[in-house]
Image 1 (cartoon, rainbow, N blue to C red):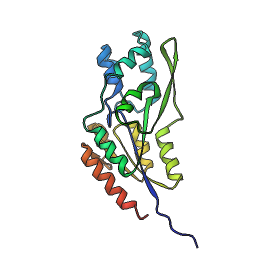
Image 2 (cartoon, rainbow, N blue to C red):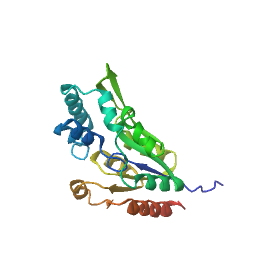
Image 3 (cartoon, rainbow, N blue to C red):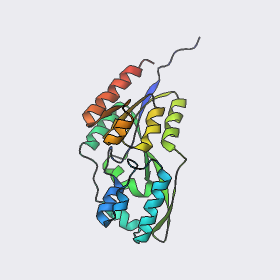
Length: 211
């Protein structure tokens, strides 16, 4: 006779717009390039979005060190560190982001070095020449892998590229998502404050704790 083992829960969170500022918008403001304001909240095709970004960087002769200098001055969103510290004290958390290892380090240090899965950039002579996705649709694949490991997954994000992750999870929420995404996915619960999101995650964990 096999014993029923309750599933453990794990939370997967997007990063930019959820815990940190949007890096590309910060770069747009620093360098005065309006085209860099376009993010995954606006463009569902991540490959197309990145090709446009890299073209803009090349045409304005912006190096990786220029970019890293801007990122080093950024700070997490107000309340993000307290929220993440509280959440990590109660449940396992993995950050799933379409940012890059060469970008996100300073912000992760300010958030207490949480686990983050993201992509890498290809750099030559201080210039970004290409980006290397870990795998296609890594957010969805990560959630599916956690589910295959018998985890109950609770996911939250704010952009088009988070929807596959949210849909693949047992419980998924929008957080600080723009009105257009909320309208398109009005089947999803949407929250604006960390207190609301923390309560929703706790409730989802209670629902599944005896599963």
